[in-house]
Image 1 (cartoon, rainbow, N blue to C red):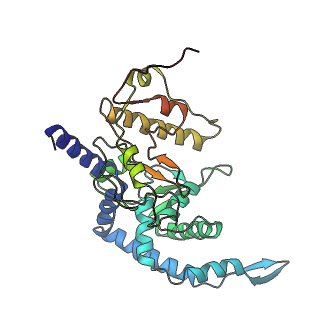
Image 2 (spheres, one colour):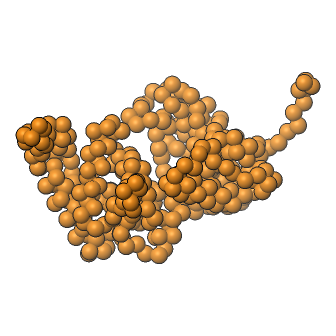
Image 3 (cartoon, rainbow, N blue to C red):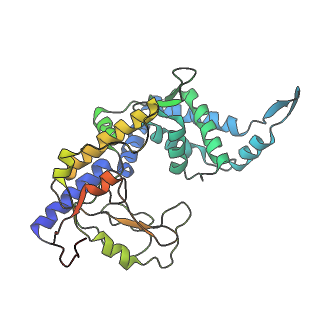
Length: 313
């Protein structure tokens, strides 16, 4: 490996440790465990969730109190859950809400975090759990007005250094060294973590997914079109018809331009995954070849060649 490759690899390691939530989760968990007040809130949350799942629920129909069957059935499904690891995972997830985030968005993220499926009953149960855990005061659920959407904001105290990490935590940028070769279905190409190469929950398997094609696509070097990025402003592809959409777009745009500055004049590589039908998808978010028109236009091949033999139209 050349000195230049070593430098690129070291820089990539630094990026993964700075931006990957896989590392930041560990830092947050450590600070919660070292804070006696927060540890007490974790145990309070465990007790609250235990009461929540062991309560027999009723509802009123036509003036008569009857069993709330659907909710009691949902409670029966979570009887075997280990509550302390669940509460810790939810507290870690909510710690990222340093500014208010939509309750529906946070709940969806939490479902993915604690490996709940995306069925309506599971999301409803998780939303109720979040409402129960709000009683610990580890976070607030806010409704600014009668017409406003529910928002979540963390009250979990974190060190200034960790707050900086949380602010930067995002979808990992492209790699600035060539991805590692993937040899089975549960590798990512990144230097510090692995992942399932098949998109979609519960779609992972050990069968053939043409790893050679993924490796070939992962090895294509790319670069940003800096002239385009400096002369054309990124605009939304949807109507900004509400405060949450405006806030989400502003955050996404800020993160995108931060990533453009991070990658800037470097050669980079996008890792790839497949869906269950074998279709290939580049794993980019702020910088990607499969996003909106602006995203596609901002990326060029790093090794440019003159195209010849193209007929005049």
